[in-house]
Image (tube, rainbow, N blue to C red; front, top):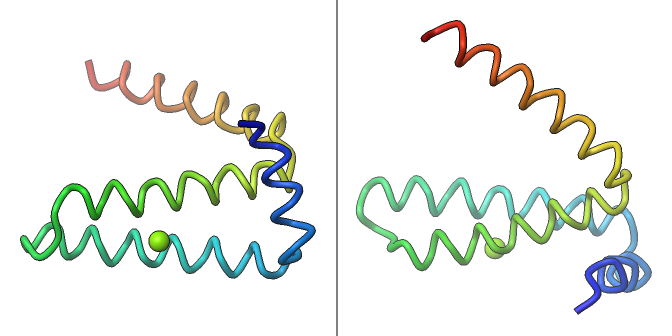
Amino acid sequence: MNLDAIYRATLEKWGTEGQYDQAVEECAELITVLKHFRRGKADAAAVINELADVTLMVGQLSYMFGEAEVQKAIGVKLEKLDGLLAEQD
Ligand SMILES: [Mg+2]
């Protein structure tokens, strides 16, 4: 499965604004299911289902904003986190 082809097709079909809205909606659904999970009102499968939605939307947004730039930012954050963890040891 070519994810870039899917992201491109999705963008062409629903547009940029539609993708922003969908990403926000999926993040909100993950927030909600995590709150329910903590209270025993949702199971792990429900959380996994919403994680899959958010993961796909992160992929979609990364495709739109530039995957290389996102990877670069992730690298910077991981370096910073590594430094913080080393400080606490
Ligand atoms: Mg969802």
